[in-house]
Length: 90
Image (cartoon, rainbow, N blue to C red; front, side, top):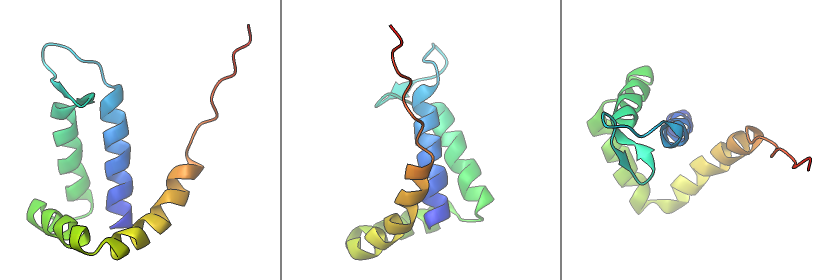
């Protein structure tokens, strides 16, 4: 689950950076058309069906300590990928 959620976080972040135009709808500042494609690719990559992913998310929602355990492994990975903000040189 950690690897799937890592890819999901990447997809969510990337979709929020995509341009909004007449062909791509934005919802919560995310390009939902692209996000749907990303989710499909993520599930295919990890060989997980939509139904299995949904049931896993539901299971984790009623077992928050287990979800905390997943994020205990995930957060250091995400933190290590943060970029250093550019400093203003003016």
